[in-house]
Image 1 (cartoon, helix red, strand yellow):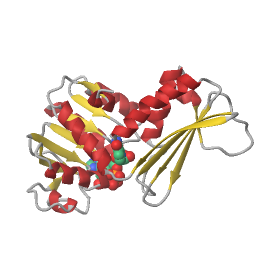
Image 2: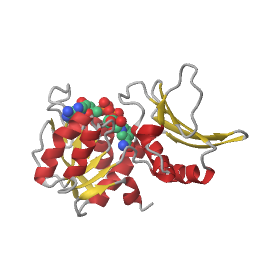
Image 3: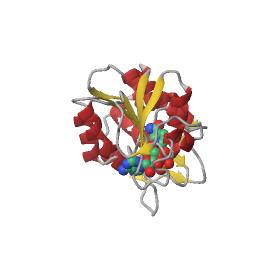
Image 4: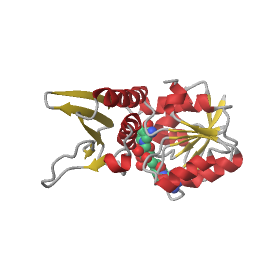
Length: 262
Ligand code: NAD
């Protein structure tokens, strides 16, 4: 049985992590943390998630001895619990998105001491799409314009989505481009499209869970790769799979491709 800590346990993703981990025979939840001023602070985390009493209260520090912490919070939440996990030797599965370069460097540095899986998207389909997008871009070549669009719910804080950035980075890696130079965010005005740029477009509407589309267009055809997530549980199942996989691994920074073997 894997002893699990859930970071951001009162959030949309955190509640589903609690529910699916509680249903599983592989996990036992020993800690659940969120903001100290969270309205649910001190309540039983199973009751918050709607799965019945689990005997673990929502806190802002670890009191048990988790083997793995699954984090879906905000970058500030990840950066608060990262040093604690490092000190206690707790493996991490990080699903939070929107990190700065220096925060990413700190995560990478911590992976010298603990195993960490970080993925901006834990779905199997998106991880396959990440691989395919790079392959399609390098096969089609420079004559195909690349545009990425993503749609998420109105509450999402970061834009473009971490997944859209990961898709663009995968394309850049496969084609020898630099993301910072190639990415263009939204379009307005009268500037013509430059060859080689990657257009990034973010839509925020209603309760859309997550949609990503990559367009490869030239003067005659468009190739489209797309993915729609119908439920957050898709990501949660992937994160719990990563939590099972990471137990007992050597320290290091892993991706979902490592977990899935693709
Ligand atoms: P949410 O706002 O519903 O939940 C976030 C939770 O984290 C909240 O309960 C909030 O109080 C808590 N939190 C914020 N700061 C904290 C801190 N300093 N300490 C402790 N807790 C803190 O958001 P969500 O929709 O559940 O998404 C959470 C994150 O997961 C976002 O970054 C989102 O982009 C990401 N996400 C990733 C994937 C993936 O597959 N990797 C999938 C969905 C969402």
